[in-house]
Length: 393
Image 1 (spheres, rainbow, N blue to C red):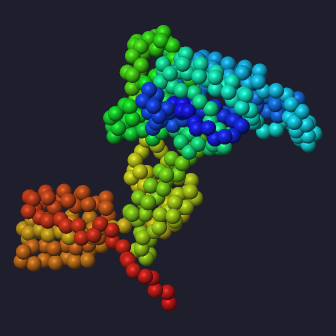
Image 2: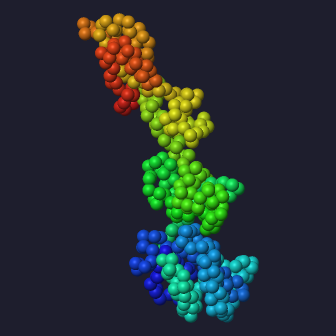
Image 3: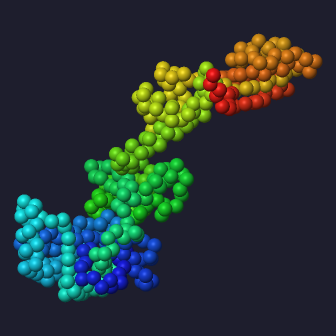
């Protein structure tokens, strides 16, 4: 995780970073760095410098929150001893205090070379004592690295939660992988789980107690419990993610409807954007347990209330021998919405026309049964539409 950063020549440091070490002893370079930022404030009394002591969720499964907290507290004690109150900061603080009606400035930590050396000495001691044994490494990162391009974003974590025996159990997963696992499109558990650890609270880095796991699941096997939570737990989704998923589902339904319908007067297709707008107007609500096709078929009758729309018809050709066609002729024509060709010849009956898509299976069964498998049913066009430019007179 943590990585030594090159000296930039700047006297100002405002964040502690833990990132991947390039040497083989540490975690591979592919892992994103973990950044802990300064939360100091300038007031009329001088500079109050310290680093944020909140447990980074990215370290879950690598080290206990208590160890991280102890390290950061030791670093903050070093800062408290070495950052001095100077006349420059008193004057600056007094000026901003008066201008902002007593409010503090935006959080910042500015360290001189002496303080940087003291912090680095403390970090070296922490690395040798504990973190190198865990394949971790702490280092300082320069202030002018404002937003590391490879900084890990917390929103990449998807939490799956399960409540059992009055206790809450959570696992940290990669986004968009949970659904793939449940759909059996992903079979490698390592591509789904960020850590093979069961948590009581992922965001706080609190691990589940062994006795709680044994009582709730009858086992302390973390990987098997993770699989169980992954299969049956509740995926925690934010409001923005839920809205984005809903918008995407509605878009899929709109596109599917557009591929199935036409304007009954012009026989021309209807754009998906028009259908999407109409679905909002009729307040059509999506059902998460139904497929897009099922919901599209349910939406078409509702859309007829506000717009001219109908299912596009299929153009079909039926060919049967004279003997078989005599008894089935009337039944066949009843399944056609419009008969374009009704021709009797020496070879038999030929019917060409338009049918509702819902009648295709009935027509197929009728031809097969009446002709004893000798008849033919051909699809000439899946969707009967008028194409080309519209002429306005």
